[in-house]
View 1 (tube, one colour):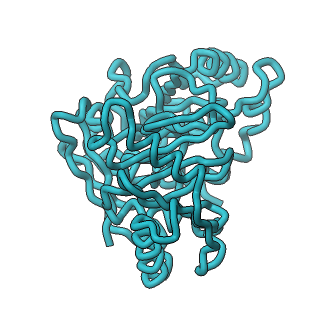
View 2 (cartoon, one colour):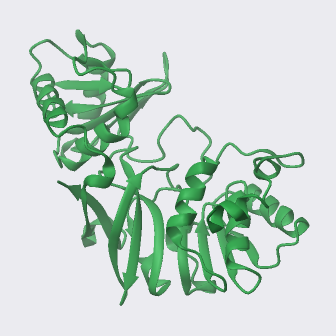
Length: 343
């Protein structure tokens, strides 16, 4: 049994996730995935660790036990309700090496830096330079990172920092709620990169990788979403059930780097990925249904080509891609690196 599993035996997960005083915490991660990420982080006694995304506080206690009483854990969350309660629960459980703060984790927390390790339970828009600046030499960051500028296109990356420069050592299937500047209320709507949203007659939204070519009225996004909501053509995916291979498909679609990449939510809890232009739109939903504006849609032909290429590649797992960190241009509005995958 590894160190994380041993620590988990001492930490009552439900005491955190369904605390009788605070109530259930909807912003929480699967404990199996938490254990995987903490194992990847390679925590050792005496380490100083930053955690971005306090959530219920369960993962924070695991970290505190793994670094021991001589270690130090700094946990941040944008939601003051969560951090205040986490501090109280940790105090009640006798943890003296943990402090939780209400702050935007994408800026790091220089007051208690440097950190030997950083673990992140929310997805930033890119790998922030603030994180690498605040990590000790040869330190590790384990964080979900976008692989395209549309929602839900993420992997978890293990990043080593040497001489202030980050290098991705591995990527894994996974992703967490988007990091936002205020607590996120609507868990069904992505936290960023939504180019148009309808609330009546029901919720729907769309995200375009080609948003820079759209106009100030979001005409392209509005039109593409309308085409999909009123699709004149539907067909089942001949390759079978996509749902079980969604992580593979979304990673493949992102790795194409195609500027017409499009993601949409046409029904609650059912996302779709595909291709769109100012003249056409087509997507495949998680349930394997393909929607298009017409049987002769150029976007439909492009989507079929993508799916054929995915099948010929044998539906590759995210772990099989080659990762690269691309410096963000000065026009991006923040310093850091974009993660991109290739085969």
